[in-house]
Length: 122
Image 1: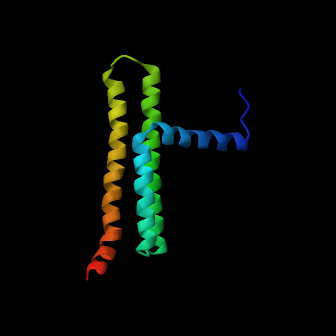
Image 2: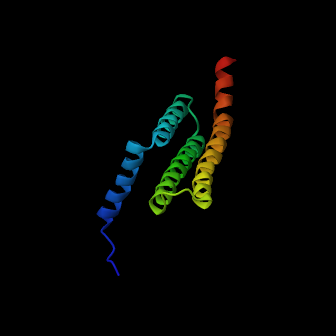
Image 3: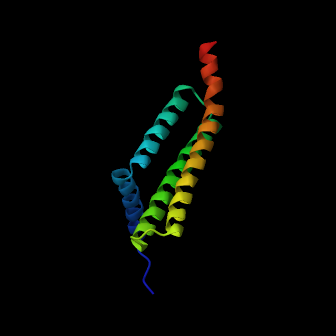
């Protein structure tokens, strides 16, 4: 059995995975940009600590979903170069998971931000 790597190696591989997504995945970069903007707006609108925590969790869920989608797509591509309906389904379901969490994030983001936007207009 292979010996487990060091904690330092674990972190290095994890950062390498994030770097891979940043370099190769346009949608991951978009999600990072939108998430950063949402967090900055949360600070500008003086969201409460609990609201900021919810916002950060949503951002983390979206980034996690995008990274899992990337990992699954790459794994499927590694396993087969030929079209297979199950391979297509894996990719579609993974992309669908990203879509679902993004839609939920937008709804929750609206719930968090709309009252603050309304107070600016009144």
